[in-house]
Each structure stands twice: as structure tokens, then as C-alpha cells.
Image (cartoon, rainbow, N blue to C red; front, side, top):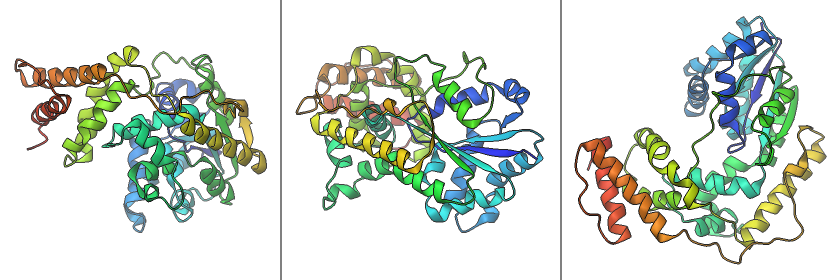
Length: 368
């Protein structure tokens, strides 16, 4: 039986994909350190977590999660590791579904957190790649809603709160007596060496594999501002597509077609109110970490709380010609999949987006 279990529970957009890829690509290094990435792949862990959420009252249907637990019990080593950011979504009632099966095994929790000045734009990108339809300026207003505002029920607000509720995650997981320790890892700034996050994670997990070769470790494909704006325009035309099929089609579209456009598209910039919101979230996280007395790997300075905010009053929209280029590249991609020549593109942007949606439906067999 493993001496303990390490649960890396998120948060989203905090380098989790990189850590997971490094864990998957380093089985021999982990083995020498007496550790194991339970299940061997992110896919197995993700399906196991989703099973629990989908059938919370039917523990007999949690076979995939139980398989990870059984592997930890059968593993004669120091630590079995699960890294799955959806664990951070667990409510107080749901925690027992994940933790009870580990009875008798010490559980250490690792929470990676990211500067909200960087997390908010990243979260909007995830939103646009999952049926989101709000433009950048609207998204900023909706996630920073007043308590009485109808925006509090918007999809933007709900998904952002769930994904970036760092203080709530700290409170829920640290209060559970089945959790032996909770360590916070701050995501280093963009100027830090690529391997720094990996070293911090290994320190927090108390697994000495910091020297793992990371050439094969991958990060999420990142898109530019115009491509995300194109997707939020495209999504209303695809709202009937099943989420599983939508994600399956969007992965190659993002990776092969839109990601290469990123360098010339730039990134969305926070406006002054959005920056104040990000600053407030960083302050709340720092206060919660200090008050809770959690161990920190990294530094809370990675969550800046600047006195002055040098941000514009209004968020700038992406250049329309770059949004159009993203639509044209998508349209050409779909036409190639269909083995067809691309006819002249419609002049209007709305018509061009609609034509892209039509061709994508045919190429991916999405119906209509």
C-alpha cells in the first residue's frame, strides 16, 4: 500500500495541464522516486472524477475512481498521485465521495493558484472554447457582478466562480478531517524558467522528481484575442452540437488552425474595473492563505496587489480584420476536410462566420 496519496486539485488555468503532462511522461522517474501517477493518464483520472459527479448517489457506479483507489492500495511505494482540477469543484457533501474510499491512507492536497490578472483572460479563453458567447468586455462585467445583478446567474459568472473560487476551495478541503495537509503552490510569472512550476509541484508533493526530463511535457494550446472572439461569434450557431462532439472538433481546430495565428493577434487586456477585480481576488487569496497558515511553495508575491492600476477605462475590441482572418482560416480548414475548393468568402463578418459554421457542421458531421 502506498504510504500516502497526493491529490492535486487545481485550480483551473494554473499550469495543471503542464504538471499532468509531466507526470504522464515521467513514469520511470516517478518509479525511482517511489511515486506513481495513478491510472497512468489524465484521461483515466478525468473520467473517474466525472463519474463521481454524474452519479453522486450511486457509489457502485464509481468504478473508475475505485480503480484509482485500489491501485494506490496495491502500490508498494511512497505516494500515489492524482492530478485533476475538477476535484476543486467538489462541494462539502461531495468531498466524502472522493475521500472516503481512501480510508486508512493519509491524503495530502496540493492546490496550484495563479495571478488573477493572468487567470481571468485565460478563463475567458476556456469559456469561448466551450460554447461561451460573451465578448471580452461583457465577460468582464458579468464575472464582476453586484450581488443583486442578474449577471450573477449568467453562465460566465457561474463558470468563473466555480473555476477560480480559490478561497472556497481552501476552506472546504482544509476543513475536512480526512485531509492531512494542504499546500499552496503559486504559479511563477511568465519570466520564470519553464521547469519552475514542476519543481514547485514536486516540492509540495514531497516527491523528489524535480530532475525529470520535460521536453515531452505539453501545455494547453493557447489562442490569441481575435481567434477567441471568432469562437464566441461561432458558438451560437453550434449550440445544438453535443458537447463531446464539439470538444472533439474544437481540439484540432484550435491546435492546427487558430493557434498559429496567436503571435499576431495579441491578448485581451483588462480594463480598469477588471484590473481592480483581479487585484481584489489576489488580495483575498493572499489573506486566506496567511490566515489559514497554509504551507506555500513559491511566493505570494506571484499574486500581485498593485496600488496603482495602469489600465484603460474600456477594454479594446480585437481588430476586425484579424477576427475575419480567423474565420477565413477556419472556413478553409473545413473545406479541405471536405475535399472542396473554397469559393469566395462572404463580405460581411456575420455571413463569413455563418458560412464557417455551415462547413464545420458538414466536415465534423454535426448535423443540420
